[in-house]
Every structure is written in structure tokens, then in C-alpha cells.
Length: 78
Length: 262
Image (cartoon, rainbow over all chains, first blue to last red; front, top):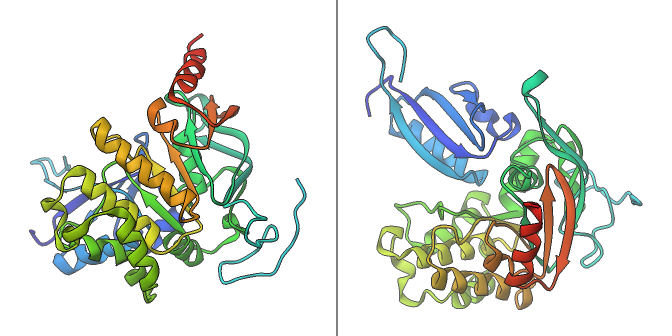
């Protein structure tokens, strides 16, 4: 895990802000794709990741994927 | 529908008496969900009123885009309706604060997902009891023993998910959903990743959980064979409840689904 790397966490369904509240300081939420919610933000270390996963587990979110988002040369992310 | 104001519990406002056997495990009243705005607006649910009884195995079916997944996500407190009421047991979940909603979803609702959603670093029994650990609740050992026995994993309880077949993993997931003895269990295409024989075993076990263990299950599926295991089917189309069927068989379900295409 590279410090400061942004990650995309995808969960099933359009999760409301009410369930994601503890994560909203760190992650932006994208519900534009049908049937999933994308959380995008930095994960600083393994403890941070465990904390994020613990919250998603505690609200019974269905985790689809977690992947790093690599910065491109023009500063955008892919 | 008559609303009877009851007492307030740890989760918030009652919307009806909740003595066992008198209140639905879950219900929606006038449920509407609208996504987007302007020309891109989609009315995924349009005034859906439906009840799911305690101790019943109900399937939700409908064509792609009918609103069946949206209905399940709103019932389970994942998504927030645009308008209307959702109650789990006697609790109006729309009136809960964020923390109480999180707690209700964790403690009162069980989930079975198509992709199992087990924690890879935990063994089977640890996965089964994880919801209780997260809730800080001691397990009801007699109940856990009953569920574990019923799920039939035998000596594999100390195995991690990667050491289990797909069917065994889904058995763990079903046992996990049952572990906290929830008010209701939502299953989203629970046999979608399984071959037909293994899927049938899982569906038999889910039916056993309802008939013999007194649980309440709502299952979203597109599979007529899977729906044939339920006691009742609610059909959705274009965001509306358009039909119901009791004592379904796969053949009757298939006939009904064909009418959606006419």
C-alpha cells in the first residue's frame, strides 16, 4: 500500500449517506453507475483500510472491489 | 391501513403493535424512489405498498429494471426512499438517526449475497459469528449450535473461505445471516453463482430456516426455479407491484414471467 494513494471501493446498491456517514470526511461518493456506489479517497495505511472495511462490514454492505487509482501524467486519475 | 402507535424501543418510533405474529417482518407503504432529475429522471419505485410476513419465505421477481433490487435496498435501509414508509418489525426506519439505522441494519437484518461476501481471513465459524462480535453481543450458543448443525458444514467450520467450495461458502453466509436471529433476512440472487444442484441445496436450507427455525426471508431472484422454493411471490414491473402468487411452482412462475413480454 503506497501512502497517499487514492482507492476506489465499490459496494453493491446505492448506499445512502446515512449509512456511509463515518466515511464521508475521507471519501467522495459516486452513485452515478446503476446498482453500485463508488467510494473514492485516500487510504493512508493498513489500519485505515481495516477501519473502512470494518464500517462497511458492520452495516452489511456487499463489497464488490477495492482498487488503487493511479494518477496520470496530467494529474487526473484513472 | 390502520396505524397503531406503540411504545418506543431502542431503535425509535413504532408504527404498529409488534407482538410476534401480529406485525409484518417488513413492509413498505406508498414507497416511491426517483433517481436523477429532468429528462434523466427514473422512477424506480412508484407507490409500492407490500408486506412481508413473519415466518414467511417470499420472493420478489420482475423484469430487469422493474425495481426489485431498489425495493430490497430501500426495505433493508441501504437506500433512502424519495417518499413513503418502510418498517422493519414495528420500527419506521425513515425516522431513525444515522447511528440507529446502522445498528438496526447490523442487528435486525440478515443478508445473503450472490457473491457470499465472507471475510477471507476469518474461518467459517468466525464469519458466522462476526455480526454478533461487531454488535458486542454474546452469541446464543444453543441457537448457533442449531444453525451450524442445520447448515451441515461438519468439520469445515475451521476452514477459511478459500478452502471451501462455492456451495459451502454460501452455507456459511446463510448461517451468518441467521446467527443474530434477525427480524428478517434479505437474499439477493443467493444462488446466482452456484450450479443448479448446489443452488437447490441452499434453497432447501433457506426454506428449512423459515419452516423449522421460524425465520423470515425475502429473496430477489430472476430464476423461476429458485422462486419456486418460496411460499409467495411478489411481481414487480415498472416500479409497481403488478401481481402476487402463493404456493408457486417453477412452471407457473415461468408462465407468469412470459406475460411480461407480451
